[in-house]
Image 1 (tube, rainbow, N blue to C red):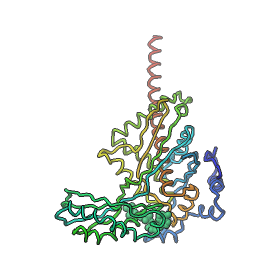
Image 2 (cartoon, protein in one colour):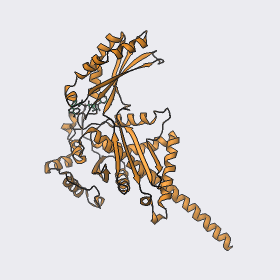
Image 3 (tube, helix red, strand yellow):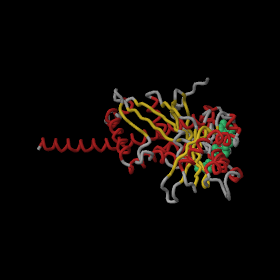
Length: 398
Ligand code: NAD
């Protein structure tokens, strides 16, 4: 195994062409691949992706350094129009490195497909009949994508929910739980749901309306955690101790944990990092955004996607958990020439690994944001204290 460090000192001081060379060497890109990265998406390639194409639209692709995730170094390609995001991620990853980096995990890549059934008199009885038909329905779903089934994915389970009170009266919702392996899975799941619809009508005696995946992918979660040694947070140049900064950051997080107005902005900052990697890898950022914010509101009150606190030694400990429905096959991940190479630079082997890297980037971005915000607050506090001390001195002198 090659051991390479993502701690590329002075990377930012190079020009873009030099940086491209460094990244290419790091990731083992061929000359042809470097040329593809320079060129980006052509109009002809774009014309195959969406409708009515007239041009290709470019955004900057930056690379965040310093990421150490589960003891492995990653360079993180990020596509974003907003300044300071890439630098913030790299800076926070450097802080996290001081404590061993990020530790991540994820659930199986299970998505939920929804089938809406209306026109039922006895919803409980229909629900039971559908649950009794579970094996038959799962087998039918699995006939739709033999490739995924061969790779170990496919239909896993059924759940049947009753919505008693909707503006269109009571309805029954069948959830198809489907393991999408390395695909984001929207098309796969939609196809399976469409195939099940006639059987669901026959078994339930109702009428099927919608058959589509849910973006609240709460069975497809990615997690990351990190511990920042309190000494690494000190800012002697500004006169702040590490403990002061850590405490300020926990207080900044607590505001987001308790207040949806703050949580929206706090989570936006997290998504600055995650979306940039979702974009770079050709994944569906609207799907990821929808899932993240719906998950943040799952308790009934919208709150922070991260948690921050102090461990027994006073170090700053952070964690994140959110749904991340992303793939390394399907969609634009291989159709977009840059996205394909971004996946090579990342070196991820599975969709789960990609989602875990994204969770770590989200946590890093949040760390950078609350550190900056908390430090500003501490700065103001110090100024006030300083002013008071000056006033005191004057009084004493006077
Ligand atoms: P896809 O349709 O390209 O399908 C992926 C295919 O890859 C599968 O059918 C499978 O047979 C094959 N495959 C090969 N190797 C695989 C592996 N290792 N693991 C899994 N599958 C493998 O892509 P998709 O992921 O089903 O759909 C993603 C697209 O759907 C995105 O472009 C997204 O924007 C779009 N979409 C999203 C929504 C939504 O989020 N609400 C709705 C509709 C469509």
